View 1 (cartoon, rainbow, N blue to C red):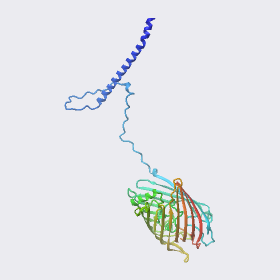
View 2: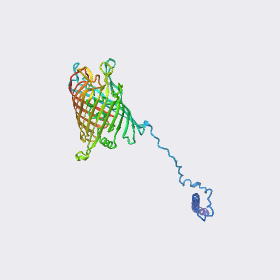
View 3: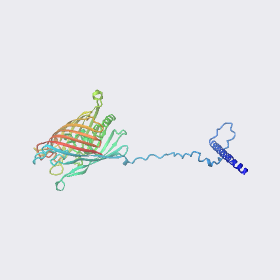
View 4: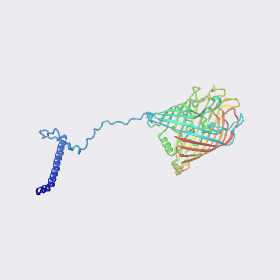
Length: 473
């Protein structure tokens, strides 16, 4: 019994001694493996060469095995690719963007000649078919724009309008909301700065400041009769060169960042050749329309603190053309008529009050009641407009009240028989843009107009409330 007790008493000491020996053995083994790895690493480095070196330092052919050290050593890095994959280039279709806008209107007569007996002018506008005794809502414009840079030197622009009407259908009823081509052109940039370009295709004719301004950006509901009579529809097929000096582009960029309503992506100088018959019409003679345009913004900061940030822009345009209007008996006139004119424009951008004005003079086809024929006759007309940008909060949006007076005496070559227009109109309105995607315009108009129909004589008068909702996308 005593011997058994003695053996049991010695067993913990034996287990403890065995554990210490095992740990010491493992430590010795780890030291040996570290020394072997160190020797292997040293052997891979080139030995220093000296003049007295008699023999190369022997290098071990293989290090000692270290299976238990694999979990302690850092993983070897992956091989670095000498030619990393380049970022894939964008296809031309990735550079295109799609945007547009829609305008819906409602016009209401307060008083006036919304209807009249045969042979007498009714109150009508060449710009808005919704001004009539029929009333109702109308879609003035439904536009989609596809544009983008297909290369560093070539960009394209394509714009149809889905609010075009077609007349002379079966039964004589007018059809609304047809698609029609408005713009289809390519810009070729001749320099890396993109200050000089050639534009090929159907595009706006550079005549008149307001004519070139987009209807999505214009403050008033319609363009003026006097300026727009030069190019009804604003577009034609041809080629035009634009040049914008960097100093001018810098001013326009600043105005755009400030939220000003500019006239569009056009140059400070433009020279163009177009068919001259009008938008989406077949050319009828060999004579091309020649057009020249120039505009120049001037910063007025040097005139004192009262003019800080103000910009005054001035310029002019000229046109030489011959045109063959449509005639009442069918087809187009066999004779070509002079369609020559020149105009000036000036603009003080609203900061917060601004003034905008244009006027032009010339000769164009016009129906003569005395001779019952079309003749090239004198014309003159334009407009004066004042506007204001009211300070508003981000939550309320932007408010811009305006007032415009326009006057025109001359032919309207886009209508059958080129009837004479006699227009005097005053418009007082307010544009509210609560968000960039929505614009609401309300206006009062006092009109006195001759209807664009040589079979109706005299002038009609009236007072109207005009409204428009525009959504941008």
